[in-house]
Image 1 (cartoon, helix red, strand yellow):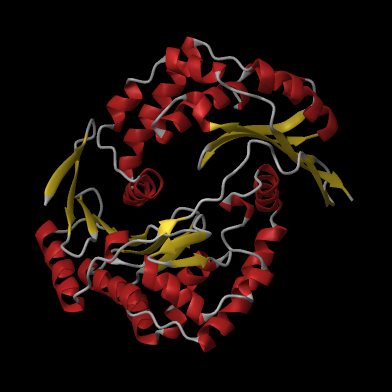
Image 2 (cartoon, rainbow, N blue to C red):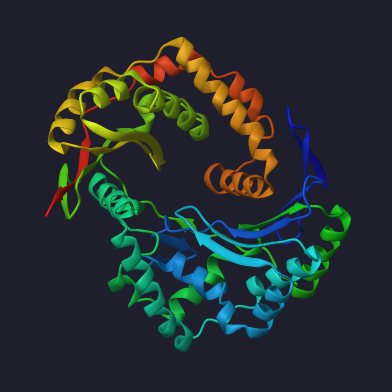
Length: 422
């Protein structure tokens, strides 16, 4: 195994790629008696079409999330479910656009929990009966997200921003999508993507590295899984213009909610590292729209807003910046923001202060094994790497580079979603 050290905090992660292609990330620590184990697949909702050999597959929206439900089907495996409960552990799973994660959190008998999670992942039975029974459950989950106004606005916003992108579909899909999903379609995805060389395991907690390593090796030797050729994701060509500039959602609410987004071609920033491009733009946005910014104070004093925040997303070849606000007058806020967003500023003192917040957050994340697992997992899924020297890389961020990025902003392709009172 290779020993990797997260600098500054001196935390060690041991890594290894098994002969079948599975990547292991083992993080032993004496900080806690709890443990967090996860198995992740580099397959999420952004894969809408792919090619393998001479076969082209159109993926039904919601399939990645539906497949997660059928792999983590504890209600269908009473023995495993009973044992997890007896151990006092918590089993869960999640799916996003980039991947799917299956996990167990607990404090008693890490080794048995590890074997249970491996059993869940590698003993999947997807049949037509269980798929049809699951459709009602997922349909209720879809309705729940539609009832949550913030989720609904984000979903509509990205659907309106893009013409061809995967983000036009939600991770969970729509009810009409779910009805099209079959056991055959899910098994096809499972066979094509749930392969050893597209999977990684993270174990964090108080354990002996060699003991955990041996358990995984022995389990894999019995399965005798082989590397497989991975599918090639087919990406639809996106255009710079937005699909729809403005949308209103009727809601019985005292206040207006607004999400204001700008879509920009990523090439204009001439920046290779997506992670640090996100970091730079996050600093620029929070400097202008966080609760400590002059613009926030100005809007607040004028009675325009109740709250305001910002965010940044990188979606394939595009950068999207978003300002979200709860307003007293949505129309007036949008009018003002249309003018003010073109005058974003960043001074060196604010940049350095924001950078220190990033550095502090980097260190604090190592106080919680769940945060460590999530950060490692997110780095692999989104950036295909773990940066063990991230502290130095953050420290080396410069005000001059941030200014260059800000000067590259283009404000033409705007999309707004807002609520209005019914």
